[in-house]
Length: 509
Image (cartoon, rainbow, N blue to C red; front, side):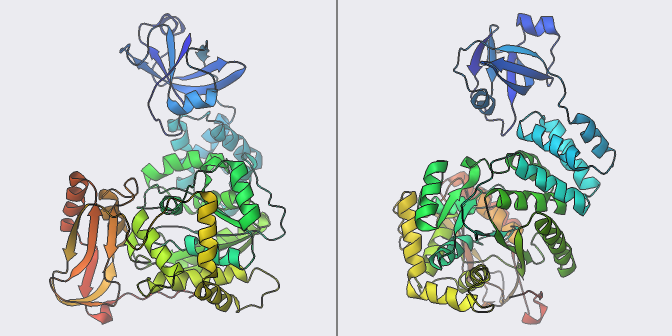
């Protein structure tokens, strides 16, 4: 059969297309959603079969492949291919045992993760694995085996340095762009800090989305390596590095299901950091009423699990529990967050102080990974680097090295349309719903529309009067603006009351 590229994005799943009247389809007894094996030039992939009656999608003499599957097979359109019914992946018996609630061993997880990384699992099989691991919670040994397997099935970077640092937040806090400040501060202190970050999946912006406002982030691996060698750091998208590829596939299932179990979270984060070559990691766990982690006991349980797996994998880990009661910074959305970052780097009086202080403290913890720095001195060193302009110079050097996009944060290109959300009454801001604020920003278009998002005018503890703007919503398209407006009418995300009603959380800084 002749290969045809079908312009459909199936998001990490290999999908094949046959015409219903195709002779092979009838003769082989294929049926929709069956697993098939496609071969060409000595390469093979497994794919889920879709059946079409429309010759504009695929004709009788053709086999169609979705965009991802076409790239993985690696041959030109029109190339001869063979298709046959596929044997189940070798790890399916282990998957069935996990579905039954059994505890799996090292070899079981390695087999499953290998098949996932090779895209031999359908979305149904992936979902079964994710749900089984969530329902019968992985014990800490299983989390270690899963993490180890995820590292083993991808590329592992080696920066030929005894100390390579990284920083990660478990997420859930809008506007929390500390990485873009921590990286230049720590790199200016002389530490190697190759930061490969993800794009937003369910949030209004990821580090890669925000950095892309100012510079290229999709860098060929050789170019990324050269930048790190010259500047000791990078702020790039991690998708080109092939780090823990099974994690990217699993995330494509976990996110739509809103499943983020502790075991899978630990394996996802630590596998990426170890594969990226980190020797020392500072991990930020925010806690708050609308954060991922809602209480201190929950945070401590998660901390102990991270520490156990990191210790088994010889990764030095410093877990920091932080305040997650509200967004960090003022802007939520790529352009607005890039504006906040540059204001902090320039020591602008308009810079959000919460973003500055949190970034300095995290940077200080990383600087103290250097054995020549006395414990407790990291914050002062970080603050001096930021105040002196050395962090700004380091960021500008990274922007130029990665390919500047000439972003003017003094006049950021914000959405052409906007509206203000007003306080319904006098009072003190006693609560801000992180989830709702993030949802409003996404409905406005972020992160796909970088200029869209939410600009906060008030934070916890601020006194406001009725009719005073709480925040402004930016959008580029009328439909997006209207969706965001309807969401704010259901809930502004702000709670007003008396200062004594404000929730308090114990955090480490």
